[in-house]
Each structure stands twice: as C-alpha cells, then as structure tokens.
Image 1: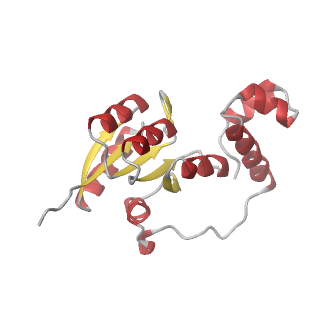
Image 2 (image 1 turned 30 degrees about the vertical axis):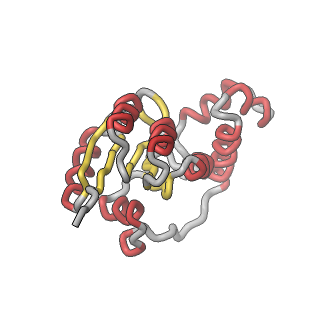
Length: 177
C-alpha cells in the first residue's frame, strides 16, 4: 500500500511555540518542517510543497499571506490554517480568499490546530459567548478597509476620512476586546 506522508509546514516567529506545536503535530502523525520567517517559509514551499500548513499572519520579515500565496500556486489542494495573535475579520476573509481553510487566534492549542487542519469538529474551538464591543467593531471595520486597499495606509486613511498618522497609530495597536 502506497501511503503519502502527511507533510506539514509550520511558519511562526515565536520559536518556543513553533517547537512545541511541531512536536505535538509529529505525535499526531505529521512529518513536520519548521520556518520562522516569510523567506524561510517560501523556501520550504519551493523545496517541497507540503499537504498541510499552519502560517502565522505577522512575521518579523513580512506577512504570512505571502507564504500561503506561494503554497497554493505550488500545491492548490494544500490545507492551510492561519494562526495569529492579531485576529480580525478582514484578514480572515483575505486568508480564506487566498485558500486558507481556517483562521485561529493565538493562543491555539495543538488539538484546535489539528481539528482545523483535518476538519475534525470534535477538536475545534467553540464559538465565543460574548459579542464584540463597539471599539472592536470599529477596529474590525478599519482592518477590513485596510485589507481592501491592499494594506495601503494612505489610501485607507483617505477612504475612512482619517488622518494617516492616526490610522498608523490604530493599526500599530492590538485589537480591543
């Protein structure tokens, strides 16, 4: 019987998290490769495109969406999960349009990542009980417009009728609760 190994690429700049998640995924039957920058992630994809990937959105040298784009060009059937500490609706929509199958906010445990990668509903996180605050809804709208403007700060500020520096300060902060 010819079995194809379940290859998994993990791309995250948090090295302790990357190592722990890599070991946890190996125990679940994946052949794991690690990368901690966009450049390393793209190099790993070009070397051999994996069947699965977990990609952090914000990395030290750029945006994890670039890794997803290269991966889906090389292997369209690859299952990608975006993992980030800066979760918002706009980037989730962008990631899904680029081919991601799920979007998880950090901290996500190995079971949630495994469930998202394999489509196993038992290991997925439950929906939150409380709705978003007004500040969070505003922040989400700004992020959506920012993504629609191809992450161009000047164009986003113009469309939102907002000063560019004010927008830059908002984008540099974490999402409100």
